[in-house]
Length: 545
Ligand code: NA7
Image (cartoon, rainbow, N blue to C red; front, side):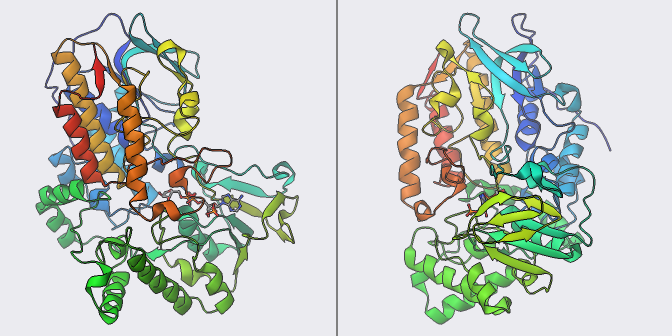
């Protein structure tokens, strides 16, 4: 394998006033993509990463069954044809270890590690208004300065574990999926309890059930789980994808959720009920998000179409799960399809037909404490040797808020965002000059490499604009930020998503967290156009100086 660092299109000009032109926080998908862009620009960069290796999400979420829900060929970087040609995905939905191996391959292939400082966590970032630089303090006691501070910390990087009383008294072992140990965990012969039935738990449950003596699943809200239908990639498919990569990326950049799919070209009302069933059956067999995006184009905006799809899924659950009572408990009734992030399953519903799996409904009988022996709900105690918390994340803003970022006049980001994030384009924040976010709050919820690519491209343009015009700072205007916030609400209100309860899309999964729209729900393609438009209109909405 050849090691090819990109040739910068600009020469690096040492800046005596700062340690680095740019500091990037995080070495996952976003951080690596940003580093590549900055190198192309000849911008001296240091990436700071808490883990011992690159990988981000895939470094931390190594729980059994963890894999992407995006098809492998679009869960990748598009910046290098050589990279596309030399990497072979083995499965349609790569496991965490394959996704991690891919990111490690990228870091090695482009000789990125020399610019990454591992095992270091950013604990504060302060903007020095006089020097117009950021000073970034890390947990090793060091402070480094930079012109541009770029966060690439990912939307799901701070796991959430409910604060149940009694956890310290528990005699068994417990694990948090978002901080899974590197050593293998053996469940053979153990009584395992898992709390949660979100996308993570849906991946863990079928695997743990295979070796545990008994698996008890604690469900508060059922979700619409669609079959993923994972499969090995064939030589033919790999060749065909390589030959069509330009078109694949073109489609993915245009698609609402960043996938290489064309619109279905029909709405639910365009076909007879019999034809609708046939379409849904066919796409249930195809699997993955194609079930949502290649059936009807109005699932997320039309109540009737959404109900049609919801009924179809509930009937599938009833036809798969043998015990009628369990089947009804697994049927979602409180939110529209895709109102919350729909999980992809690998024999998820089938797992509840096993003799060693039981489902506990904690909607009206909540977990009250962890005891020495296991989990206690209001009415009963359930014995366990192992507890798995698959209880989600303080999504999107959690990591940024915890980083103690202070901008002009000592403005604290966490305080500014008390009522929910405020950004312009999901990339910048007023009062925080030269702070850029890759995949930050109020950027799209979509296939993440596509979102990242758009953000990084925009940040690259912004830095080039500053440099070419001999300018030092770029800061979003407060009115542009306010308008973007209104826009976020308008976009979500045009869909059925606002009907969902306790959705992490709106911050509602974390007790005490403000209810606010955390994503841009106008589609990844439209988002890119809006961002490019602002750049092309001479960075409209920004003060540069
Ligand atoms: P999610 O989707 O936030 O799921 C967390 C699960 O944990 C969900 O089922 C919650 O129930 C449950 N939960 C949280 N707190 C409790 C308490 N106190 N009692 C019972 N159950 C609880 O996180 P995931 O990690 O599964 O998925 C996050 C994203 O990662 C996913 O969407 C992909 O994009 C990748 P609730 O639904 O709140 O009733």
